[in-house]
Length: 276
Length: 333
Ligand SMILES: Nc1ncnc2c1ncn2[C@@H]1O[C@H](COP(=O)(O)OP(=O)(O)OP(=O)(O)O)[C@@H](O)[C@H]1O
Ligand SMILES: [Mg+2]
Image (cartoon, rainbow over all chains, first blue to last red; front, side, top):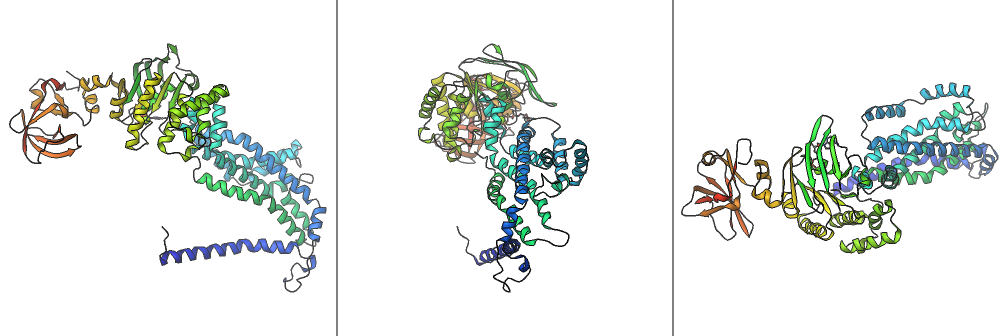
């Protein structure tokens, strides 16, 4: 039944208004950056109606010629590999934690939470000292391992929750049906927890993609990631706002589809997609 | 085909002893029902046989082979769970094929068995659906289908019908009994519903607090319950338990008499009683009567057509042959 009482309509109107306000605040900077990216350097801070024709593609051309595409690629490599590796280790770990009857599980959850909540500085300084000695500064390997300190706890933690929602009976049924534990995991538990796994992978990827701090400390030149590379557009005496705008767009566009997928799966994984 | 023997099997979770040491023989081809109140350890006992729980002590033999520490998948048993436990991401066909795929049965044979199982279980039109698109009864049948295709040596059912509505439950009960007659495979069936136990079982095992109270055929349990617990648990409505002078008069601490073993008269009888609430089922009427000198009202069955008015006086006579006598420990005399 559709509720058409006036109090409901008032509530609905209020809700819509609130959403529009929120949307406005969220969209404003995006639109601004978009406009900025097409403005000539000199006209960037002028109101658009004063010089509506000061439009150019120079900012885009400049970015294409710079080191920024390489940095984007680095970001992809780091975010992709550290997420992939963390999934390979973390998904089975989450399964084990959710389904085994080990007694020490409480401590594991405690440790994981600690790892998730501790500020990155806590890891970066020891890592930095270690890396300097081990010659891992400015290497992909070093950076990817460092990022796994972010992605692994996240993925273990969220897969633990996802697998906890898969009924024990489902796994027991597979075992009774003659599946080994590995097959029960791969063919029954994992598909049942798939929305959670996709969401965890995307969140892991995004954390690394958006990271600035780790990359700032651990990279020098060849492995610089995109958020750090943006800093190159800020020099002593000037800031290249047009390029920064383009770089921001280049950083955002690739993750838009991920956001859309993640949105769907996060909702699914929250609404218990494993129910028979 | 399997004969299952439990020898001094015991199970404790931490300090809690859920199954006290017990012995049980299940003959090949037998339909055995574990029945008992909630929490008495029925599921645990079934899961011990399945291998989903490790025994704390004792041995489980399947066909004379010690299987106590054999992994569940190797025991050749199939289990049907209360929640059906269908794989949600697989079609009905894939669900049913799963155990055969694990056993590496050739494709053609898989197909043949799926089709014959689907036909028996009326699932032919649903083979390409997902479990989420099926009704409760259909899901139950898929779960059974998944169990039969692997041709197990015994079936284990854990309250398979408790999620179905009453009408469907009666239908499925028949289907499972039918299946047992056709396959002649050992079946172990867990339920807390004594009607299911009575109607389906060759042998009933009554469990109470992790102890087997009695093992026997439905009629043995009905006619000769070994103790008060079994006497009260088996039969519907419950047996009347009477203590006081009616009991001590025949050298018992308590006596039991089933509602269907009491005759009624408006003129004369052993006990004078006042009629209370009546329950009309059509075929039978059960009414509660307050007998002079007894603390609790007793339940009596009569013909569905007999009219008894609330508050009127009647005379009740228990059938002396059918009176069960129990001592102060609740043990049958
Ligand atoms: N994994 C476990 N850890 C600790 N205690 C358990 C565990 N599984 C079962 N128990 C306990 O063992 C007892 C028997 O449980 P079980 O599930 O066998 O009962 P049941 O007879 O099947 O009951 P129901 O009719 O409610 O299904 C219960 O008291 C329960 O709390
Ligand atoms: Mg149970």
